[in-house]
Image 1 (cartoon, rainbow, N blue to C red):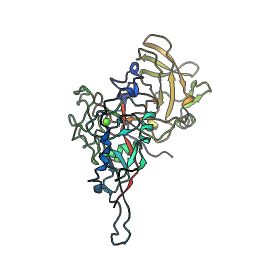
Image 2 (image 1 turned 90 degrees about the vertical axis):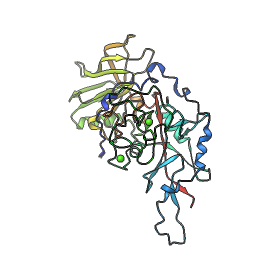
Image 3 (image 1 turned 180 degrees about the vertical axis):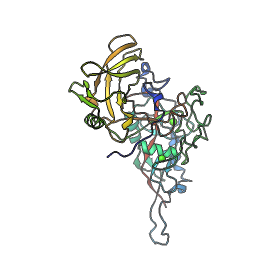
Image 4 (image 1 turned 45 degrees about the horizontal axis):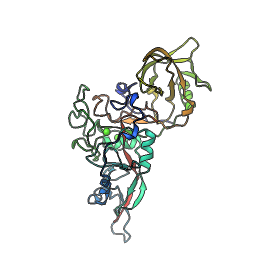
Length: 383
Ligand SMILES: [Ca+2]
Ligand SMILES: [Ca+2]
């Protein structure tokens, strides 16, 4: 049923942390207003320069003797064809930058990528962004890149396999906007898109390692019943009542991880078998909703059976507590699951930032220092 398993080694470095300097819980709400000065949105008009689209567009035409010239398919200039020779889809060449009016995303060099986007906002913005044909006409709309699209664009191999980092298997110490080998940042701020000419994938996509985190769409929706069923099949007997109380009557908790932005804690059982959070540290200094997930990375796949949306109740006004109630969020049933990928200028290590890592602990409405990269279907190119 779910056959694809993703490597997750090193992911633990992200557990329970917020998204970085701009995303501590107290700063939530600054949101998209914290956008860089993108005074020159005319950059998107670069698509009129079609001088090199033919490089990647010739997917057909082997029978050149036919009288009818078959259409060729490729990508607009602000996007990259994946793979190069026989394109299947297009992806933005650069991290996303919000347009001046804030209604669409652009893919341009030399601009600060927009962060502070929720996953929901990223999907809306990409879907509102036009794909322009060779004559500048609108031919389609973009979408937020799926997880598999993003990964293949970065690792240089469609499907299984590919490079560890965009330019190969060696950690690009100063060739991408990532910390050094020891995880210590050497940059002091977000960099303009495309600032690192060596930080490019085999297909020609920039900054997929480091600089801004990026949302990608794992194409999974929450299904609490599927979680219960798949856990039961694996020997963990959970029950979730209508109020969201999670209890366990058999199995072990130690394979599960609690990932809630703004909070550090582990899972434990009380005498009645009710699951709660223990050794809790609440990191927010102002009112904050501690919502996230219980995740079973041992069963990670393309389905929802390893993902349970939860909320931790803050039980006092001090920043830490020995234990706190955990509630399953039925309100999130069928809500989209997110993926945060690529690490950032301020965080990451060689082990923790391999391209095949994805971090799914953020709710879809969480706003942190995360940008987005759009994708699109191929477009028909003029002969
Ligand atoms: Ca791949
Ligand atoms: Ca990036």
